[in-house]
Image 1 (spheres, rainbow, N blue to C red):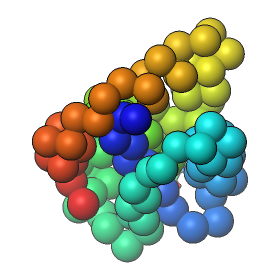
Image 2 (cartoon, helix red, strand yellow):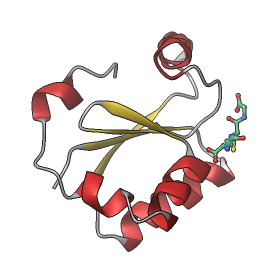
Image 3 (cartoon, protein in one colour):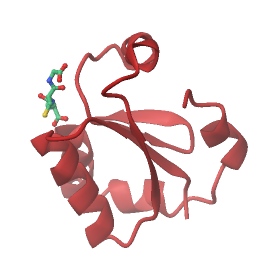
Length: 96
Ligand SMILES: N[C@@H](CCC(=O)N[C@@H](CS)C(=O)NCC(=O)O)C(=O)O
């Protein structure tokens, strides 16, 4: 199973939907609350070119937000990405 990290804020509906989608797939993920972490939000904007949460990373690669992973799921591509072997080093390189 791939290493999954999701950057979120509390009271974020898209974050809840992204986590629900991952949970529905029995995916274990690491959640980073960036509500009080402007340093991580700056890093995320540079890394993803997006300024919204959630931001989902699989094996260190940015997949985007909820609508992005839902689109990957509808296209039948998300399960393959999630089933890849964990790249722990790539995931550990993310900012926390
Ligand atoms: N299409 C994006 C929309 C994400 C979105 O609009 N997130 C809101 C919070 S729920 C956001 O980040 N707003 C700007 C902010 O909180 O700084 C997704 O599906 O993830």
